Amino acid sequence: MTETAVNRASLTGGAPPLSLSVEHVDVKYRVYEDQVLNAKELFGRGFRSRRSTVIHAVRDVSFTVEVGEAVGVIGANGSGKSTLLRAIAGLQSVAAGRVLVRGEPHLLGVGAALKPQLSGYRNVMLGGLAMGMERDEVEALVPTVADFSGLGDAMRRPMNTYSSGMRARLAFSIATLQIPDVLLIDEALAVGDRDFRQRSLDRIKQIREDAGTVLMVTHNLSEIRQTCSRCLWMREGELIQDGPVDEVLEAYDQDRAGA
Amino acid sequence: MRRMSTTVEFAQTSELRDIHATDRLGPYLSRMWARRQYTWYVSASELRARQITTVLGNLWHLLNPALSIGVYFLIFGLLLDTTRGVENFMLFLTIGLFIFQYTQRITVTGANSIIGNIGLLKAIRFPRALLPVTSSLTETLTSLPTFAIIYVMAVLTGEQFRWTWLLLPLILAVQFFFNTGTAFISARVTTHFRDTTQILPFIFRLLLYASGVIFAADAYVSPDLKWLFIANPMYCYIELGRWSIMGGSLGESLVLSALAWTVAIFIGGFLWFRAAEERYARD
Image (cartoon, rainbow over all chains, first blue to last red; front, side, top):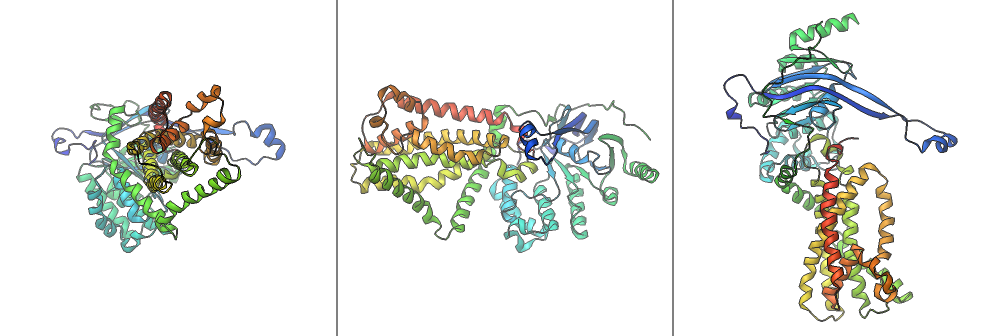
């Protein structure tokens, strides 16, 4: 078990405790431009640092999430959703503000493989052990993973031979080996087939019932309607609206229709 | 449309922790300890993978060092005759080369330990120091047969058994900590400069000649410059190894230098590696 796991039994009575508190978070990162230089430019300037731009991807975003909540995050491409998730996972440093988390966050990205050259089976082992599980514990879960992901014998093949759907299915299974304290899903379900998506959404429901918290970025609005109780809408790095799913989706739709 | 108000209440946050704050040393180490099975599992399966991928498999772990000993013996022992001051040059060379390569292997594998695990780093938060330690353990397991060769070579070349033969594993154990320290350093350096993996072979080639692997430093270097060798940790480990198998005198300064380097590189390397903990998952 992870040493940060919460004693969930104690979390009863009164208002649900917070699982996540994002406080005035700003994220900036530097991107380097890929430029083709001729020989003269290479010697004149190429040895100095490359030209770069600072992207202000998340601007003063604040919200809190209660234990057991599932929150959808919507917004156009490039609105800072993925960056926000990475910042919450602790994988992207923040320029200002802070992120407080109960327990361990787990980020599930698209096309995620821990070690592509290793078999699915070994990836499950690596993931479980890196999360701090016991070896026996992970080994005991392997049949469940093979079954849930529908991979079967493919578990013994290297992950770089998998289709993107297979990769997504295995990555989701690894991320949910244990009930994650905070599961951050970045469009990772999008490549799965309908059947797998349904099973994943069922699993997410189960995670919520076991006091896990889920934050999911998706362009599939029906997934959000089906799973989430709340929705965040982001535009150009800012949090535009935070509220009940129907309300936010309606405003989002109107905005898109207007634009 | 409603703008998000900035007066969100951040109540009851005492049980939460700042995800961007670096763990204090104690919790960090206990998180590493909780994941020790990861280290064992990866080392063992890496070892197995290497055995499967080459036809001769396990045999290569022995053939490779034996061949390199053969090459050096041919060139330096027979053609150039750098055996001045050494009675059993074959054994002298074997010990020198294997102890040297032990550090070299771990440092080179350690250099890839972060950049070769990006997928894992991006998905799961765990103490990053686990990765260089894992490389270090993997290469130690790979090197075990070569350490056995040292004893075999000692017997074959007619060396008399001494009680100090039993000290070699202890010396190698001390060197293990030094090597883990160099793995920490090379792992972080490589995340700053990818080209490190290209440069490392040359650094080690230079060190090979500067560490008295293929010649006895005493016979070639003037006493005024002897301190240069004693200040070189690789020379110290090699000389300690030779002393334990082949006998001879052992300078106090050599032992002290070896221990000081081990402590400095292991602890310093760990702290320096950890100082960049939050950066390792970035592109």
